Amino acid sequence: MESILTEQPVARTVRLHPSDDVVIAVGELPTGTTLEGEGVRLRQAVPAGHKVATRAIPAGAPVHKYNQIIGFATQPIAPGDHVHVHNLGMH
Image 1 (cartoon, helix red, strand yellow):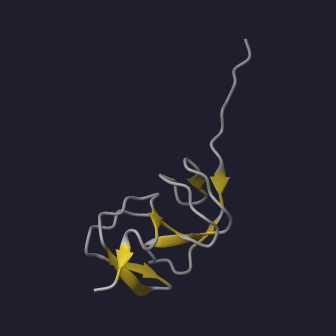
Image 2: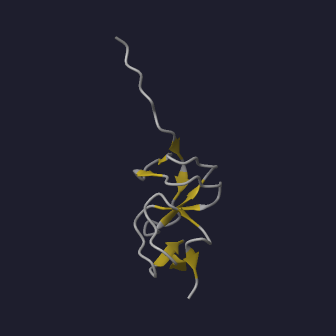
């Protein structure tokens, strides 16, 4: 009997600095996509050029990109969450 395997899409992202909390989507990424090299599955669709959390970020914690603080989590952010104005702000 032949088995049918279903593969989840794997997506390319760019990590700008090893200590960053986010990676950048190289192209549009659908919900459920696994991030290549990160072991993280997307919880929402992410447009090209947008950020995806690769680790849990508590509400109020700084979010790093380019090894710089780009804002603070306005709510808890889970690995695989789209990071944008709906969950990132400045104090």
